[in-house]
Image 1 (cartoon, one colour):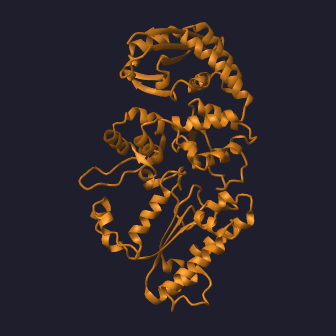
Image 2 (spheres, rainbow, N blue to C red; image 1 turned 90 degrees about the horizontal axis):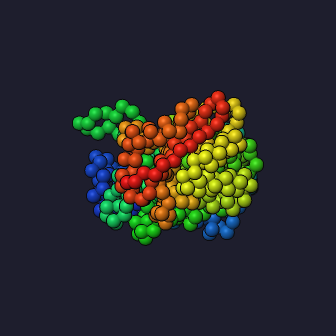
Length: 499
């Protein structure tokens, strides 16, 4: 299950071309990796194949209500045309038709359903339509004898299989989702290796492509390779939105291509829901912070939301948030998505966001003016307003405060880079300006707890954190910030570094 523009229909078409008896596709696949697999010809063009695009069928049917009957009618018509003596008029269901064909010919069927969840999303408020549709799918795939005549079923969609009373409606499927892509992780989108090759081919700057479109992070166990050590641990795999990468290669313009998808309008009511902690969680993520999410209770539809975690889980499936399965947290993956979410949030005129942006803008301009006293004063105010008393004296909360305090950098800078390997250590925060704001200085921010702001600046200098951005040639400000746990006072020192 993948978001829009992640290649679901292309994959469905590829599978149809490989398996279908109606294709002669050996030349299409023989030069690819699969062409070297020993089982390549065993399955090539060997199966009866049903490919159903639910969204297309809904359009042809005229309404969501008529979609299931439309699918059944047209599939049976095609099967009767192909097997007139086997699929007789007395057979009125698709499973019975496929079973009859298998009994007469011995051939199993492969079923590919594209946009399986279209009715779950498009008819979200109509329980009867959804129940009829789920009943159709259960009849097709969960019948006693379905395994006898179905060799493989492959469903694409944005949402995982809908839950009925907390149980999956089709629990005989193995799901690969944005939460847990498993072995299919490298095929969710483009890998870093693939993007680097495309950048070389089209003359694009990889670091810029990475800032704009990287960020989906998956756990993946690489397959064992003959004569190489067996992988002992999962890898952290970075995946890019393939549509965005293709567009930036073609056009050379770094912008958001996400709003051209059909999911944008659907997130406006989601982020406006009145759940405790939802707005603050979104603000934290826009500022570059991860937020812990409990994903288990989400019912895999567009209607059933019990808390902010359900909303955030749906945003992960829609691709507007990425998910770190190790930390069980959601985050904004890249600049493209950050710009889309920012626009959606700002269109809702959240008063708390507007107030925070004004404070943050004042803080940022004070940073540019090297006014450490005002910076410390603004951070102190934001620390008091946005961190609960129970976690106020917490080193991790200070990092979160700095992310939120510098929220206004979204307009001028890329998403802050946290814990960037640099020189002889890790820089707490690095802010790099976007090309259109190249006159803004880059920022290296180091925070300290119960020390001195000068100690933070000294660490930046001595550990040569500026080496992390040696390709950068503009102005650079070093920002040292300290928080005194006893007095609850912040202090800040800023100096300019000449590169």
